[in-house]
Length: 550
Ligand SMILES: [Zn+2]
Image (cartoon, rainbow, N blue to C red; front, top):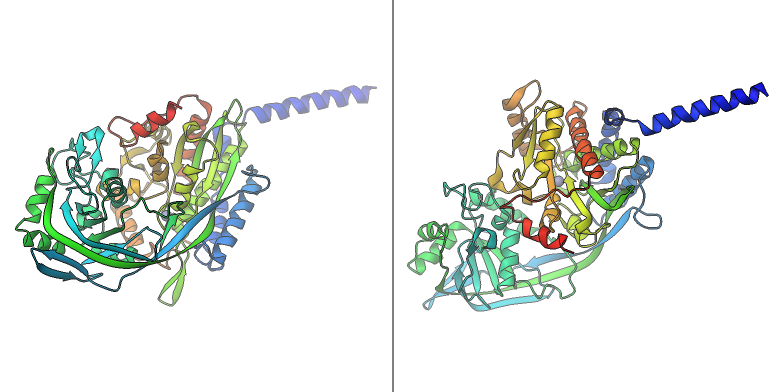
């Protein structure tokens, strides 16, 4: 009898303390479960030679997606279908063949310009042979239609069937006017991808972007390298018949010569194109070109794990870090495996540790999605597919928190926000950074358009407020000059090379601190019922407002 009472009492006190234990883990408890040792282990495996540089469609892909699935299972994440974390992403790989110079005729005078030296060209159209013949050249300034800035470079300009020349970047660059677009900070309208999309909407036969190193954010060699590798795109029912037949780039020098043949000065035209009310104009030059396309369809996989929420389980926060890298490529110093330890092993480890912290806590109100997209390196393909086929509808997707290229140099005083000023998520960062004794730093190089060059951009473009932030510039002990040098060294010697490899000296305390930061931000978002908004002037605000009406 006594024994039984005693047992009951013990049982009751045990359940009480268990209950207390379950209901009371604090954010600090959850953070204390995050482990640098685990992060190192994840990165060492993902960036090992065995994974062959994690290229989509390769044996490296099979190993990677299996490994991430196992990590998700160990963390206790839910699958997205019957038994799997995998989302199939159908893509098409297009290789262009160019056998001739590009031909320009101005008032009977012919000019042949050289492939690679003067121009690059490609086509999304899934056709074997593509031809543009005697297509009239039209200069359309920056090629931008931006209602929120009251700007339309195509107004009253007939470009149907024509070859449009446009400038890279947007009118704000070097205008000295912060109110013109965003001044030196590039908007999405400055990116080449936007310019191709807009030219297609306008019915152009071809679009050629006039290169300049500052405006593009990179030299001609980068344009050339990316033009020469096969390109991956989403599969398309109409085989991209709605895209311009040809897309490409001209060097600044060649564009300048073509303008001169028309007795027009390119630099003067650029100055005019920066002024509101600029009117595009036709040149007396016609372009002819033929190219060949070969293409094949294939499938890759996004890896997605979920924590189901409680009373707001149909709404979600999406964390993301792409799993793919460049695979096996050109040999350098005897090494041909592009391991991708920083790009993007560190961010995957960052995301896994955030998941671990969430699993320590009671169920959040909103659901949490952990997305490892494929095919980021080839143009944000996995994340672009995800936003068209989301696990939770986009108007129920509260925010995306992405990371990429997290450097292993230890803790930082700053939290660098790329795309600072875009959305109210900045305020969440400010609050969480302050708690860690850190300060918010807008990306010091916003003219390169980094906000448009990693997976969070797929979410932004689709309307979902998206955050790209991490410590990057101000080392906690060694300061800014040290980090500036370290970042430059990494980008010059390791980035997108076989030397992006795990090394024993790595200090992941900064990546862990960023995981703590983003865990706190996600936890707050997951337990409130407001939707953070895009700020006024954001090019994504209108899309979101339309989406939230449904
Ligand atoms: Zn990356």
